[in-house]
Length: 384
Image (tube, rainbow, N blue to C red; front, side, top):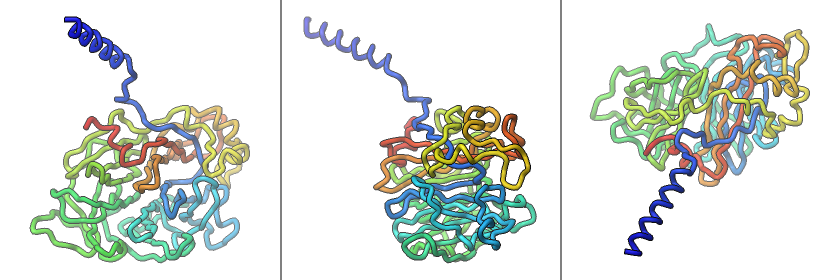
């Protein structure tokens, strides 16, 4: 009887402790590090040969636009690569001049960095350009300064694009090694065994039927849109649980997952990213905290009073941090033991409130989940 009484007492104590522990359900699992630059557009973090990099889309409003030094960049958007830790510019990719919505994907099996983008000169919006062609670029050599390029996919009109490696594809889908997400909510597959993602273009197929045809390039799959806002998509296949995870949304960012692209689960909490006061910190990433007292409003080329990030943006986040958009997440590599997240915190083209000046206010913000690799981070937002 004494033993039973002690066991019952122990159970009561354990249950009491458990009831008073803070629940992780509904909580965010990342820490916001702050802004890494102002007036850069969509960005992709990637890991390659031991270093974290940031692929950035650069509009003409950016203070250090390459046209200041190189006339061929005049009035054109382009993509560039920087080291995330130091902010050192590795390269301005000259073959991306006049292109936009460029994103990065690292193929660790072939030791190649791939870029994908559409023919949209972001210095003049995206109207009037060929948004039905996805262009590819791939790294040549050891230092990310040399690139080849080729058309990759003739598609429906699209904007942002993201590619992920798939190691154990769902049996409900045609065989594939790679998946491409195109905005809004379009998905294409590629089964090239050689890892070449630049060849083979296929127009939209209205349906895919068995027996499956093994295409040599990209082709659409059937899919059902999730109940979530479209915009700035990002995608990662997780080999730990065989789910396809996407980030989407232009005002707030939503995290969802699927295995068949018809049935979707949304994260808890949702949205995954929304404006918070932490967005207004000046991050040490890209050396921004050391230049934040000089960089800020207005955008390049606009004649308004100057309002540096420190103190104006930092002290007045409600003036500009209205929307969270165009998020990306990194990285599926065994040597990367933290999760990195990047997104736009901005007015989304709207005029900021005083004391900021100029036509709009754009930043990119980074967050991290320390000690949690991406493949373990993503399932934390789902019940099983």
